[in-house]
Length: 150
Image: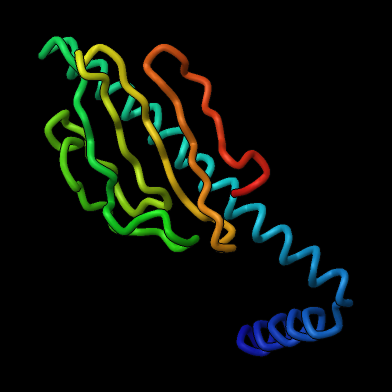
């Protein structure tokens, strides 16, 4: 009896999916894309926060900020998440993300080592236009260029 009920539930779901209008399918696709963008935005916020904290700790210990090469080296080229590979600098300041990342992160430091700029580059909508998110040590607000892309 239980198998029969499961079969009926699956059949009803399939019929509902097939019978959806084009507008319903577009709405469902939009919802899925929006959810993916929200998850990636959450990654971006937490990664920038952790990089900022790592930089602060590193400066307290050494008196200067750490330059970090774009990592992962081939990351941020499309919507697919990438395995984290440190191209240099992030590990030296004790930073290593858990799991996959959707952006390529980098830190440039002033010549005197007293200020930095963090960039996160990605193309979440996979349209070929990379977006660069930027924040600095003296301004935690994140800017996005171009502002209408993801």
